[in-house]
Amino acid sequence: MSDGSSLQVEADRGCFVCGSDNPAGLQIQLNVDVETGTATSQVTLDQRFQGWQGVIHGGILATLLDEVAIYACRSQGEQFVTAGINVRYRKPVPVGSRVDLLGRITESRRRIYTVASRIEIDGVLYAEAEVRVMGLDK
Image (cartoon, rainbow, N blue to C red; front, side, top):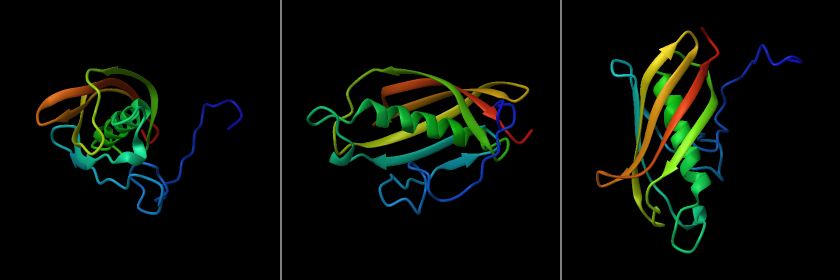
């Protein structure tokens, strides 16, 4: 993989977000809907993920937005990587909050997908992202 043109990835259970074998990770489960090109999940974010006092770190929120986008794309195949992400934080997420994650494919061109990802609490938008995702298995 010297020129970056061919990326080989292997699935395991070590992912920080969804990996069941990663004791330091979130270990969340994501639901994929093949018909709608969406992924959803719920997760409670405790003090391990705090930035400022009482507030979840923005990097954790970006990570969740990224992961739900990848899973939305998994409605179309198996292997994907993030090509770019643009995050917009709307409100601070309080520690201890149960958040809803939603990723929805909005566009696809060849192997590149655009996904709208959202973090909501009780139907209120807290963070969102536009994520560009590249398919590796097409």
